Length: 439
Image 1 (cartoon, helix red, strand yellow):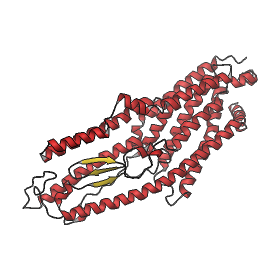
Image 2 (cartoon, one colour):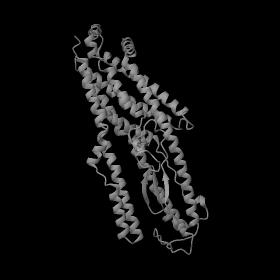
Image 3 (cartoon, one colour):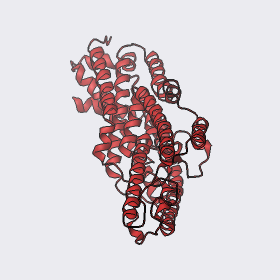
Image 4 (cartoon, helix red, strand yellow):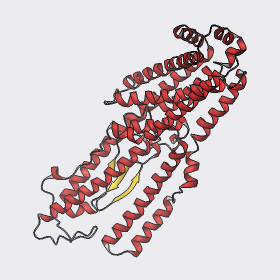
């Protein structure tokens, strides 16, 4: 019986105009987004390689100039672009991708890529296509699953055969999920083809597990909207009214809540303006003469600024992720190592690299018996001025990605939220349909 009902539901969906239009739009958006990402990724990889070469030159030049220079140099560390950005960009183009450091301090984060400010908007990635069009298509496919059949009289005929109601609802859910998986699967395949054939980069290595993770979390998000549509459709006898209610809910969850993060973050966790931070730095330069105290004060100001910035983003995410679309987006960012989690990882590794440089300076200084061994950053003559003998001993910065297990731990709360949405809406759908008047 399940197979017969499922086949009927699938055939109706395949013959509908809304499925055809949704299929074309989703596949087109997948392809267009991957094409745009391809161009930007190639540019960012080239700039990253140039930055790595420049860093190598800076380290060698500093080594030839003298050990003390490592406490005063400006070495720029670059964050490599994420190879999974076509699936989940995570607003990476709006976050710093470079930082200036020396052995004394992490100086400042900045954008090294010459990016157009007009591009500071949502990426056309997989999460955008699924979160916007995928969820909308889920409602359009399912809104009349119960109320529409009642209006046509087919639901009364079906239930006259003593078919279990739970079986009918499961068949409608499975049919909707199968039919919605078709454009998502096709879009994913087209996206991978565009990435692999659209330039010299090809499909990045190690993309398999993140791809599966994003696809699974996307289906969880779509599933919650299918259950929502079944629940609303089982609560009304008019399919048009059901569609109106669903579109209002979709607008709140997908458009309003998901895009209110910036406003919420500014209200609940305001961040000082960069100009205010610069004034604090200038005040420290004027009033503090002791080198160690000055460096400590500068480091504290910069650290506090970036701590508040990260806190603002985290507060916004904590609130907006109660939308299933936002939960899906943040989970995808964690899986793909993009967004704020990637920036936080970069900042931590940059600070560890600063510590490695400091320890390297101490080791090299200890080799010089003529040095006073008093490391006061920015003051000549306090430590050895000798050159570095072996350039390969100078620490090099290498950004290391988190393991997938660690990334999933970051997305645990989002997974729980998506599962809860599915559970609540599914429970409501079954409870309502069991009491639904099919006449």
